[in-house]
Length: 158
Image (cartoon, rainbow, N blue to C red; front, side):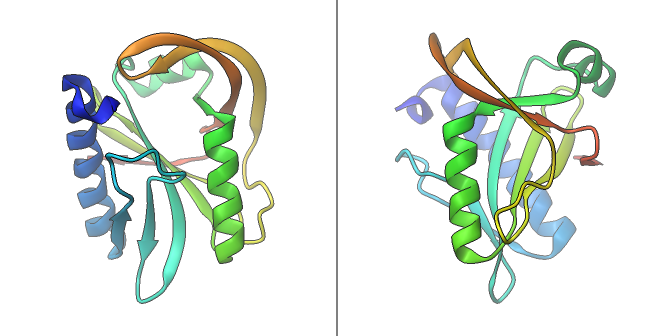
């Protein structure tokens, strides 16, 4: 699995940093799914009850918010299959699905509600089938990707 490689271990450590930040900032538990298995979601937020389903990603090629805006039009690329599963799980639990995007170099955490507790979209998502990097370790895959609009996301310095 990718998590056992050097890049995977770095990404896992960065996700841990984000999890600790989210717990401190929002006074909730960030309960992760097993990282050595291909879980449908990354985590749930809990405060005596489940509050949200979470999809978290770390991006290493972005130097600033301005770069993210100009190069990527403030869109977070993630596989549609992953987002769709997370949204379905969230709707089944009657909680929102949120996306947490960590821009590692500028140490910025962007948090965006992806769907409401009833499963309806909460932000713009553009779907496109494209050839992208398959995993954190490289390779290529052609698949349907979601481009999540992060312009209205909440931004925090880590």
